[in-house]
Image (cartoon, rainbow, N blue to C red; front, side, top):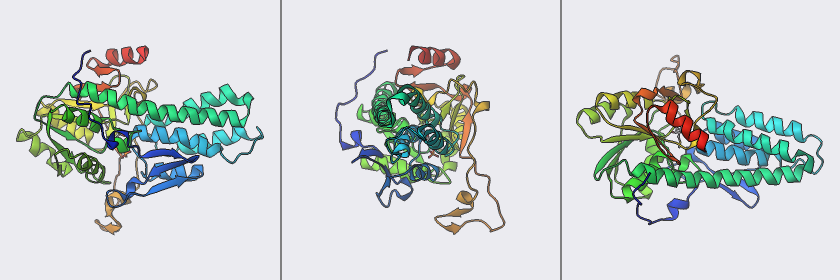
Amino acid sequence: MSHTTPSDATSELDTFSPIAWRDGTLHLLDQTLLPEEERWIECRDVATVADAIRRLAVRGAPAIGVTAAYGLVVGLDGLGESADGLETRFDDVYRRLLETRPTAVNLRWALDQGREILERHRSDGIRAVRDALLERAQAIHQHDMVANRRMGDFGADLFTPGDRVLTHCNAGALATGGYGTAVGVITSAYRAGRVGQVWVDETRPLLQGARLTAWELSRQDIPHRLVTDSSVGALMSRRLVDRVVVGADRIAMNGDVANKIGTYTVAVLAARHGVPFYVAAPLSTIDPRTPTGDEIPIEERDSQEITSFAGSAVAPDSTLGQNFAFDVTPHELVSAIITEVGVLGPPFEVSIDQAMSNA
Ligand code: MRU
């Protein structure tokens, strides 16, 4: 498939990553503090890594996968040179990381690569296992950045000059190894002169849109406006949205897509108003073990994320919230899935199967 080559202009933002392996240690940008403060967390044990994933200091499916891959290395550090306990320690670290968030499939995808490495290098000793795990984590990290640039190139071809594009949650550099999936596509399309404006919905309850996507677009000087989640219908009925592009936490083999709560609502509205609805995600987000969206586990988070805001109650003490972190958009509502190997169209059962078999 041919695609427009966007401007080659790159900036430090093209190489920015929220995850860094520096001086033998994992560093994570604490996204809970953005946009006010840019503070990095130094992870010296697996508990710190697991805690960072659980409380969304690092978040977004691909970023969680990259972090988990490095987390295995962090978890084995300090074990000494003896092979005694390697297996037990690996199992413990694997389980502690896997338990953090259930929906983003990139987590298990990355951890399972670590398990294969353990099996292959076990007889060579701890040092060899640890070094091979680090090498794999760095490769996963690097590959994710490259995949996102490719997605950007493929996705930009779907846009026409002046498009007003809406995105939900944050699927930018912060949510990945770098560059972003949905925001990466928007960036590439903007550089190709095809985006007039981005609509950013705030993404209740944790405001990934307002705090993170708006922060990323501001840093790149991409024109954008922030709207409440409930504005999407009004925007579309006024014909102010030309396209939607979102990321994904897990894509089933039939093309059903789990993503941040509220994505399904946006997709229904897009179908009602004839607005193309694109999902941008790497192949690592497609789960061969999940046939349909019905099998995707949906994370439920603390009700207090809804009943309070920035530490202050916004509901009576006795009121409980129901906090689904994700929802599932059925494949019929998805116009195309933008991946690093090209743009997949319906029927997704066929296009996904082909893309996965050729990968
Ligand atoms: O709860 P979060 O912030 O981890 O949810 C993130 C999303 O829903 C993203 O859209 C998805 O992970 C894709 S990130 C490229």
